Image 1 (tube, rainbow, N blue to C red):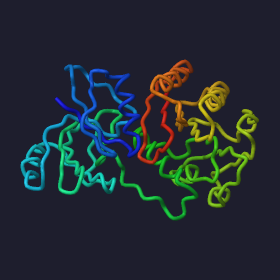
Image 2 (image 1 turned 60 degrees about the vertical axis):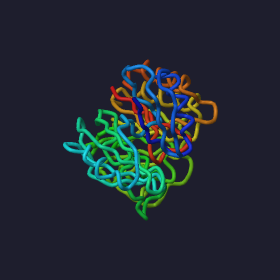
Image 3 (image 1 turned 60 degrees about the horizontal axis):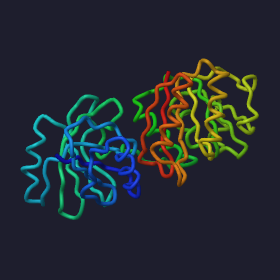
Image 4 (image 1 turned 90 degrees about the vertical axis):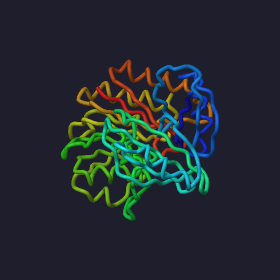
Amino acid sequence: MFLYCLVNPGFEGRLKEEASVRAPFLHPSFSRPGFVTFKVLEPRPVPRMTFARVLGEFVGKGGEEDLPGALAEGKGRFIHRFRLAEGRGSGPDAPLGSEILDVVEVAEGQFWWGHRKVGPWDWGCPGGVPNLVLPELAPSRAWLKLEEMLLWSRWAPPPGTGALELGSAPGGASWALLNRGLRVIGVDVAPMAAVCLDHPAYSHLGLSVRDVRKKDLPHPVEVLFCDLGLKPVEAVPQIRHFCHILPSLKRVYYTLKMGEGLDTRNLDGWKDAFVKMGFSVQTTHLPSNRLEIFLLATR
């Protein structure tokens, strides 16, 4: 049996390293930028892997003339098409628990296909790339990351939810939250975009994260977003501080900077740090992530 994975181009090696730790019974096989397959050496359950946007069981491969037979495999399943060259796919979003047939064009006129089931921490959109377009008014690409975080976590924050964002400038994520009706406190010494500063539900603290105290926060906070440009050894203690002084925090959305030295065992260590704070933890490599990993902590 073979498995296929869709991965952010350039991170194929990271996925293979993760597989060697989490599932050493998987043997890397055919790959292309953005696409990796594994031969299953033992019939064992395959764990979720952070760097695999999509992971499924390989069924077949062929050319254009073989597509009708491939699509016949989609009976009773959602059919998703994905072109590696474009990094985009087509097909309806599949809800939790549904079955998908993925047809991946790995090169011009060359297709691989297989099927998968949408689990609680899986993408249901084609290729694991949601159909999001950065708005012209968005202050930064952080808007994309924020929207992907919420989609992947399947959480729609109720309007009026109190949010704290660490490292908010220039305001892409804050703007996305404000547009969803949240009350947002942004912390950053760098300047924020006017579309945030002028919003009645936005409060800005022009302080270093290390200097913020509970008394500085103008309203209660239920969710924390952290996109600090700091290594985990510097950022996680700051998050721990806020989790300690804000018992109302139920969710943390953290973009953990990988750097060059962070491997799977290091990542597990940082996940354990959040578990010790009383959280359940999941990680993924969002389509818009580069040298960072999205970590979701809930309690």
